[in-house]
Amino acid sequence: MSFVMRFPMNLQVLSFWQPCIALALGAMIWVTQGQTAVAQNVQVTQIANGFEEPWAIGFLPGGDALVTERDGRLLRLPSAGGAMVPVNGVPQVAATGQGGLLDVMVPRDFAATRRIWLSYAAPVAGGAGTAAGFGRLSDDGMALEGFRAVMEPVGRAGGRHFGARLVEALDGTVFLTTGDRGDGDLAQALDGPEGKVLHFFADGAPLTAPEFAGKDVFPGLYSYGHRNIQGAALDREGRLMTAEHGARGGDEVNAPVAGRNYGWPIITYGRDYSGLKIGEGTAKDGMEQPLFYWDPSIAPSGLMVYDGALFPDWRGQVFTGSLNSDLIARLDPANGFAEARVTSDETTRVRDIRQAPDGSIWFLSVYDGAIYRIAP
Image 1 (cartoon, rainbow, N blue to C red):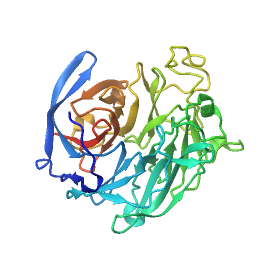
Image 2 (image 1 turned 90 degrees about the horizontal axis):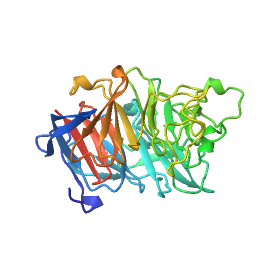
Image 3 (image 1 turned 120 degrees about the vertical axis):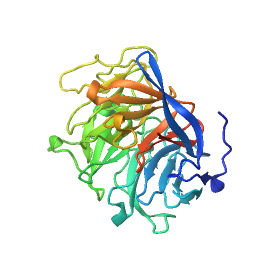
């Protein structure tokens, strides 16, 4: 695989919905379950390339897509092909370490509101903090107008563990996931945003879980005890699902419930990078168990629960990319979250994975700065 020179203003996008025109980079993927690897005939198509650290994809109703780059650029990919369009009006970001411009989320009522949500690392006193907000995509699609942050980020030194995925719930409210900023104790502190799932009304007002009524908690607190959630989506029943990084082992899939404590760093299935034990073990009263965990770690990023027509056998299954193992993990909740590993030449450092409106699967490769499409 070759590296791609970056010419930002001249990048071309192949037609999204005409894969016969696009460049088919692979005729098959490998699906490995246990010790058995099976070749599956699909088309892996490159949609666009030349990105610098792409982080997330969001689909617009008209067929265009939005892509974030960690250094602070938001790009619109026209579905008809042609040059990608930079979108102005993005907030200032702290592109340091793992921070920068992170997730993008297009609400279901976009046609009426033209609202676009972003998560990002914001530069604030003390360093940087996870932030989120929204603006209106201009009618010509060239700018975010009137962008407004919806929470006050807490500044911490260093560039680790910002999270930060955005998910719209079925009722139109919005979840934001965060990381512990490299300090596990913060994930257990209810008065801070680190290592949490936060919840907001559609207008950005915090929606604190009723289980925390009367307690001194960070506005919008939903669940806590998380290490670094970099994947989140709704399942077919509308339940929030997340994928979060462990340390050396202990990556987890959870279905966070309001008011619950998910244990980090008191319980975990991982160990410190030094090999030393973390916390008190793998279970404790009052702390939730993961639905699934990896040991060794795969560094999961992005999360999708498939619900399309192109791959009917995959409906309801959970997909997440890997940042260290060059694969896409596919988990089957109907079979005890049994794992299959999807690999091809293109599944290198997969940062995000999404179901496109046509039922195909798109993923971002950080390794070669490209977007790929999987379809039959």
